[in-house]
Every structure is written in structure tokens, then in C-alpha cells.
Amino acid sequence: MIQSVCVFGDSVAKGIAFDSARNKYTLLKDSFVSMIAKNSHIAIKNFSKFGCTVTKGGEVLKKHMSELGRYDYTVLEFGGNDCDFNWAEVSASPESSHVPNTPVSVFEEYYSQMIDEVKACGGKPVLLSLPPIDAKRYFDWISRGLNPENILRWLGDVEFIYRWHEMYNLAVNRLAILHHVPLIDISSAFLKTGNYQDLICEDGIHPNENGHRLIGQTIEKYALANA
Image 1 (cartoon, one colour):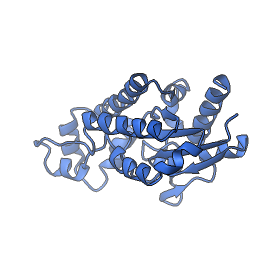
Image 2: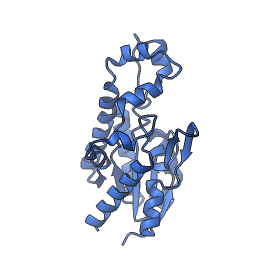
Image 3: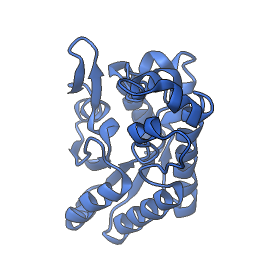
């Protein structure tokens, strides 16, 4: 029986969503982590941070390595910030080459290290795949105050954002296979809904409260099936 879990991730795992009415990012009261803790009575320690990449996440992980063996599972959720670009630089210089926050090869390398470190500490890592993004909404979001035409010229087409994000999601899937660790497929749960955009915030990338409810249900379903 699962009694305790710790979570390392970015703003999705932290439970951050964009509140359109208040025009700012807020911490959801009913994030998927909070929902699971409430429904299952599992003690969950959430070390996730807004804007976290695998490199920053690795630094956070190192601070808590002595604790990992105490938890039944260590959940890892990264990729959304790693694949992102400095859009102001892209807007200013669309003819130049630009690199993401974490190139995918570096992403896989650092994520692999995190998985190995969790195992070495006696922890049991579990990976979460990424919720899909709404490319059009996200393009509109990142273009605010910048030059949308220049950004689009660099991208080639708006859907490039979706494909680029999916490349990192595929990397997460590969890592789960490579390291023989469980992967909970959040991506498919969203895509199966048909109108997954309804589960995403105005910014096109953060799941809203309904999206978090689906993530929580997907994790609970996985846990029951693999108990």
C-alpha cells in the first residue's frame, strides 16, 4: 500500500495555472497533487518549482537525496520549460539560430542522471509524460509585446511549437523504457478527450483545474491497475 510520495517537477506538478479573471498565475487549490493526497490519504511532499528545468530540478533533487529512500515513490515531471525558447531573442533576430532552454540531448542526459540518482538513494522513480499544448494559443501568448510575424517566420508554422514540445515528450517515453521505470501516460489521457484544448489555460500550456482533475484521475487509475 502506498503511504508516501514525493514529487519533483515544474509548474504543472506545482499546480500553477493562469487565472484569466485575475490576469495572473495562481496556485490551484485542487491541483492534481492536492486531489490525489485528499482522495487517497497518501502523504505527498511536493518539491516542484515554477519555471523548473531538468538542470534546476537536478539541483533541487540533490538537496533532498537523503530523504528519497523514505518515500514509496518519487514522481518526476519535466520538459515543458526545457523545450522553451527565449522568444524575445527570436522576435528580435528571426534569421539567427536559437537554442532552447535545454537542448534535447542535454535534457535526456540530465533526466537520466536524475533517474539514476533517485535509484541510488533507494527511491523508486516514476515519470509523467507531458500534457499536450495548444499551439495557436501558446503562440499568441509568447508573442505578446513582441513581433508575431518575426516569431512565425522563425518557426515556419505555428504547429512547429506542438511538434517541438512533443519531441521532448517522446524523449521522456524513451527514458522510461531505457531505465525500466514506470511512465504514467498523461499525454494520451488529454488527447483522448477530443477537445483537450478545453483542459488548457489561456496561455496554451498550463492545464487548468479540469486538466488537473484529469491528470489526477489518470494517476489514480494507473496506481489502482498496478497496485
